[in-house]
Image (cartoon, rainbow, N blue to C red; front, side, top):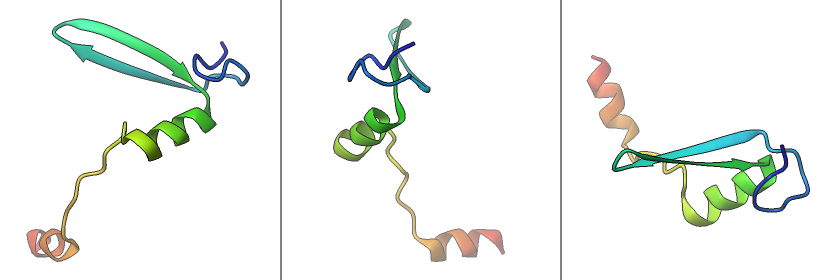
Length: 58
């Protein structure tokens, strides 16, 4: 299946969003996934302090 954004490369990633029981999927190539994650934070990483993490392990 081709990427639904660029329509040029093979889609290797499926993003799924479920809101109010309504499921929406989009097929993306690696390049478009990288672009969208960098520009729009579709994969936001949690912010944490490494010291808090290490203290929690004690």
